[in-house]
Length: 227
Image (tube, rainbow, N blue to C red; front, side):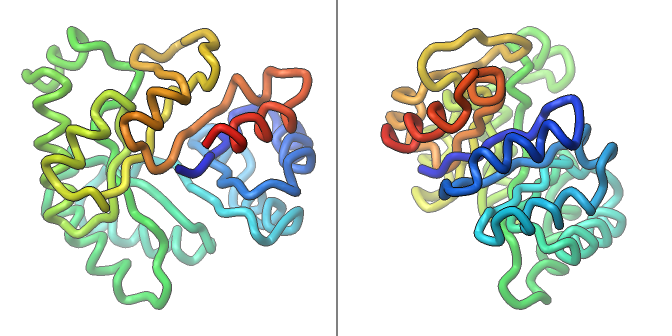
């Protein structure tokens, strides 16, 4: 299991201050939509300047027509990221086109597909997808696996189910982690570190419990000790 720290702070400088505090740690850093729109590709370069060993997950959840998604994937690879994601609901054709483009590169990044956002509860999810979260997530995961992607973004509660329907080696990245039982905030399907370990999550994403703490480095070290 690997720790991915979410860079969701209100300004670029606050994110960079956090990164500098964590520069000695073996972690991934997640750059999401807000930070990337605001700070652009220069943020990715500044992260690597602080510590070239940091792994970057560009979390833009690409969802568009197949060719645009493939072009976007190529552009993200050009930024030197180590992992990015698309939406599984873009469909098999789009995901296969993305991977066809990705696989033309030497040492391509990890590519994941988003299944159901952790902000959904079952009622709000069914209103859009006409299926329960568990059933539809399995459908999305199978499509993703058959399309050649490396794994999915899902809640902890779907991790083992997805692996059972695909492969034990199929990666699961699980947001909404509250390592030691912190508050859920705007997430619905959250879980603690013990549950993530039990469900065989490969990557855990932690944000607020780290950057809202007075000792972010101490929290990260505690998480790493426990995984």
